[in-house]
Length: 77
Ligand SMILES: [Ca+2]
Ligand SMILES: [Ca+2]
Image (cartoon, rainbow, N blue to C red):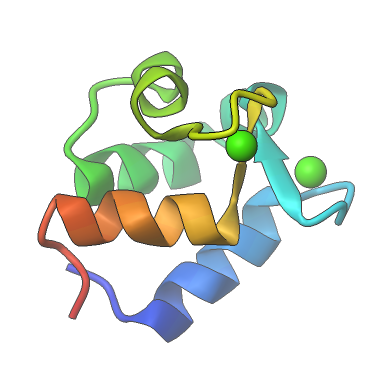
């Protein structure tokens, strides 16, 4: 379970080039953080996260998309 603030700081850490989106490469660059994201979104890999929650299909996850994924997994506190 995570709060929105915790998610936001996690998101910022993952977004290495600070373009406001977390790409699949950025997820692979931080395996530890990526594992937290997987557990909070009930997905098994960055690929699955992208397939299920990249709603606009741009190949990256915005904070809104991440938040929605965590909400759908009922892990947002
Ligand atoms: Ca980025
Ligand atoms: Ca997206």
